[in-house]
Length: 305
Image (tube, rainbow, N blue to C red; front, side):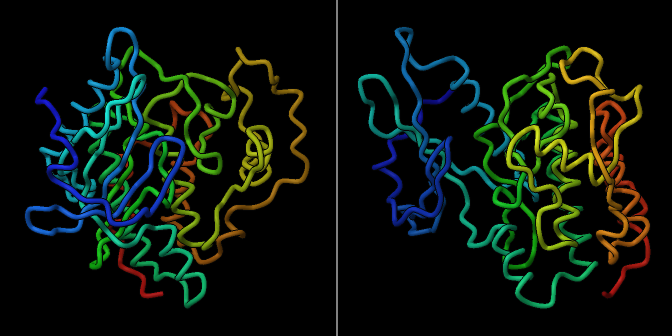
């Protein structure tokens, strides 16, 4: 892997635009041509053996993604290093800069006339296209949420923030809990191993949010989140409930179950069918991104509402 360039030689921070557990994002500019960029600053612990191999692999992965220039993946422009401290290294991942994410767009639409069905379809298709690209390259995003989905001025969707993405082998399952609570799949909430289907569940949640203009499942803890899901979608079939976990099927006290169809009355039948395929409880039965893109929802006569 090429040695990352020093951040001070190439880019200048302008102001902070976001932060989280895995890094801080700044609006910045390229000193060479004054182009506006996004700079994600991450702190990498240094062990006695130097920079962890996992980090080197992650940086290589980011550079690899950047070479494809996929239309629904935010463009990764550069990887640079900043200060090297005694026990940590400051790294900068440089992305193309966009002013709007899906969260701010949803907030704006909730104060207006909502979102047209044709626009929801276009956004959902863009998200799935980006997810399909990641999955075909054996990458699980693991943190899909409106804040990590960017929109260009012309309405093109771009998936961002791969700080939690990991390449995986098909005989390996990922086990660490990372996905933001309201978009977590049941297998994560139940502490089970998981893989690419977790991203599909997140897309299903986002599709519902595009119609509702508010999150679909708003739990306050893992257990509360699971109950919120079951009280809307109902209890899964007994054969779909995992047998090797402490929470037993017979102990589920879901109470009165709502009706997702009535909850989102402006969702067309084909859209509802696709959403239910993405919000399938058992991950092995959940639709894939490739199959979801072939769903009739994206090819039916456009709705103008």
